[in-house]
Length: 303
Image 1 (cartoon, rainbow, N blue to C red):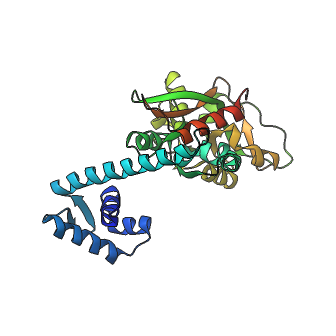
Image 2 (cartoon, rainbow, N blue to C red):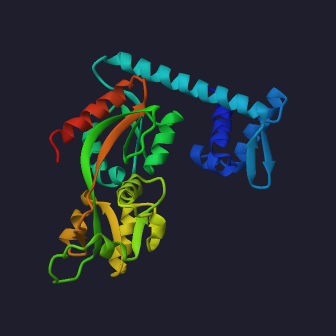
Image 3 (cartoon, helix red, strand yellow):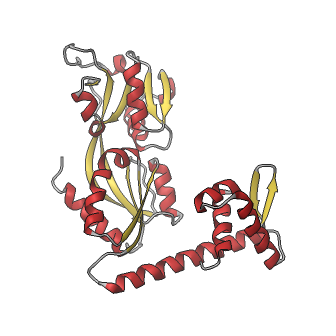
């Protein structure tokens, strides 16, 4: 997209915000307004409607947005293909990764430096969001490769097993106390619960397991929904009566430090899988292929 004004317009259309578009492109809001006005003058039509702080696309704006996104995708594809011609065995170009919270915080970051050292010509970006948003971003063409956990699957996406995981109940540890005794499910669910937000794979796994035992989430004493595991752990450290559910892989430091403890719950096993995903029928570009193979190699045989 050689015309910078089209990049500005595409950013405004994507965010429906002049401010966020300016932040994305590192230009001032007045500059954003100037570029939009120049485009409207060039095409002789209003592209955006502004009512107070709300921005919406006109019919002409929707048409131009579709063209701008297609042009940007075509340019990026050309750049990736030209880079690939330098060395058919090497990986080069853009790689837009997305991962749900547990994977983004505790699994993948430790692998990125080694991948970058092996493939220095790959330009990495990384989105951390819940599983639902990662799937949506892939379908919108905003990501090349995603990594999620959860049970819900889209028929428009291809899923491939990456790594097994388990959710466990956790609470604040008692200093010097004995290991946590197992609780019945009824005892565990009587505690104030701190859970992940709607759209997260973690909450989906828990909700599915409870539904199998004819328990509705709406009937439980949920103290708080939070959008990341770190926030849940910090909350639990300050709330001795509360109970949370997080990945076992997220607890190594806190358990070792005696801050949190895992609480066995009788009759509740929350196994899940981490999976890689991409658009169904899409052939992954070489950077995405290399990253997927690299990650799979790191986890081969992992339990």
